[in-house]
Length: 265
Image 1 (cartoon, helix red, strand yellow):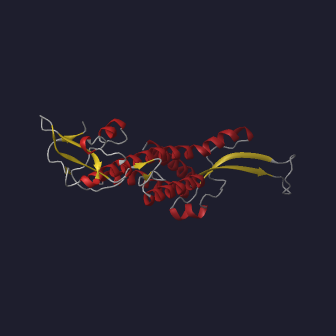
Image 2 (cartoon, rainbow, N blue to C red):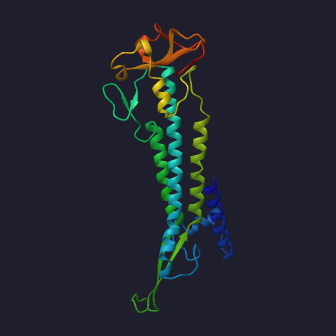
Image 3 (cartoon, rainbow, N blue to C red):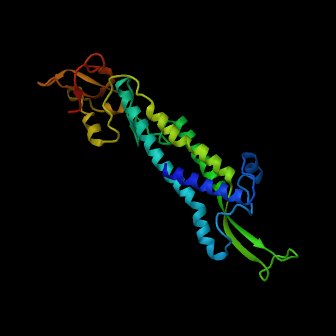
């Protein structure tokens, strides 16, 4: 949210700067100025020469770096959410394992870090935001020529600066809000079907514990459909049942939905 606050502050500064120059800062006025187009009245830096090329280049690309960082955090968040959902499904239905190098009936990992529909939408959203950022703040170089319009080294002065488009910045902020809103929406979704396996995220210790079906172990079982449940008659002296993944064909016979305290042991 800090990045959004900084973006809003920069947009407010840009609008104030335009208003101080007598510009119309209504939506219609900003649109008429152009979407990502150069306007001498919308400069992020003061009048400068070649010595500011590095500064202008850095300033123009900072939003892109922040946007990439936001996407990495967002992508890690949704990967954790969809991984938890896929893990929970083992307690609701039979399915094969998802692994990075699938064999036989195993499933491969998601190409976009999420199911295809969500992954394509999030990737498209990121591409649009990067393009909008490039239209909101961009590097410019202006050649000032002599009165005859001649462009030569003797009379040409090169000015480097950063231009900004307020209307593009508004679109960037509006569409950018889809990232936290979609993360909140996905986080509020409930896992259907109960009871299910305890959420383990990517903890290898908990995953390993869930893969020990004791007397239901079969060679090559990891290549077929599995289901999570309680093992019948496998209860210790404290009343704790043993739950794990096991071949789906045992469901209903040697496995059932847990009715007592059940965990990974």
